[in-house]
Length: 209
Image 1 (cartoon, rainbow, N blue to C red):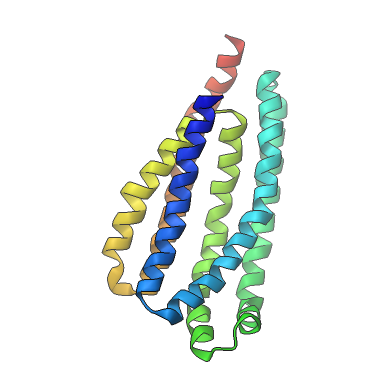
Image 2 (cartoon, rainbow, N blue to C red):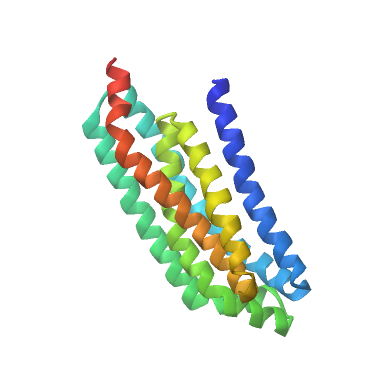
């Protein structure tokens, strides 16, 4: 229990650092960008809460299917969670693309902040489609209690992808900052997807042993 919680703690600290760093770098670019990014992050938070519902559900279902060594239930639960997560992420992405400018104008009356937020809105749409895989795979690995993989994937994504990408993309200003965040989410999804493909058979083997 301590090992699982310890790995999750490190993983969560890395995630908090990534968003705190994002906000800090936005603040360095001025109040307008800081305010615009704060509004856009509300969209990301809403998406995360909506999609985490499927991740939390799959945690329980995957844990039960692995505990019973029920490969069929595992496959069905994973497929259902994937289908629903992708469908909801597509709906959210379309909603942000179509209604995002209106929502931004409702959240702030500052023209400069409105313009800055709307110009960066496509990054939010892209991040909504990228983030769904991170949330879903997080749920799968937590359900299987393979949290060391989560921790290692997060550390790798932050240190090898996110921070170097931010450094290299600084000339692009706020767009470079958002691009680095998108690459961070993509790295999380890719590393976990590769690990899932390699490890999932072993999850049942360890239970059988």
